[in-house]
Image 1 (cartoon, rainbow, N blue to C red):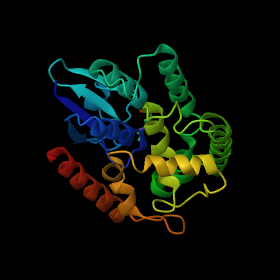
Image 2: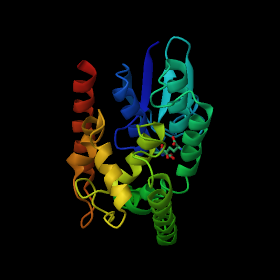
Image 3: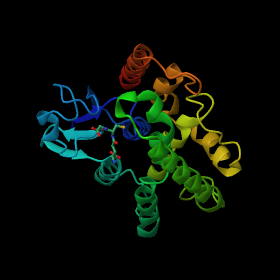
Image 4: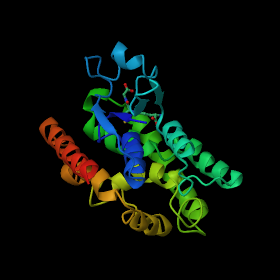
Length: 246
Ligand SMILES: N[C@@H](CCC(=O)N[C@@H](CS)C(=O)NCC(=O)O)C(=O)O
């Protein structure tokens, strides 16, 4: 079944889906869609809205049937269920439900890393009000404490001792904050989270998925120029092509 992934590598939820596909060595074609744009290749263009009515990336399409699906977590669980990827989404119903619980929890909690810390520097056009950024940073800090003292306190990964969909979803948000990437938040006060971040960098596909952030570098003091963002996306696409050709 041929698979198309719509999005750009800079998008956190797109990265989560890409990482899953890399990890499972599943072939796919990436079609670039600019988030928020109404232009021909934009996520708010009628042609794209017909595929994903919420107008967001990621979105996948199975070309043989024309089936399309938006929402990163729905995409990841769908791919895992239909392709039998039980290592990252085990069949045990309680384990699966716990992974689902994290994936639901993620949205107004860990996902706030992007709203509060990264998007304000990268997407000036969004004009995210300071009060919203502040609220997002508060939610993120509370969620990191929950991961520190709950999810990551007595096993290696979020749900047990091996990587699951929950870890991929969480890392694309938290991982982007680290000093080797955007460097916009100090995670050193969370020892369990820091240990987990370290383990996640060793998961197959990590470097290829994060080329975009490695290229962008530290944005803590100075917001990157549009040129720099475009170049980081370009380098990420080259990494993607190399990976898919392997
Ligand atoms: N809940 C969605 C969020 C997707 C999302 O926020 N995508 C952003 C890019 S990172 C987007 O497409 N924004 C464009 C817009 O909202 O117009 C998911 O997990 O897939």
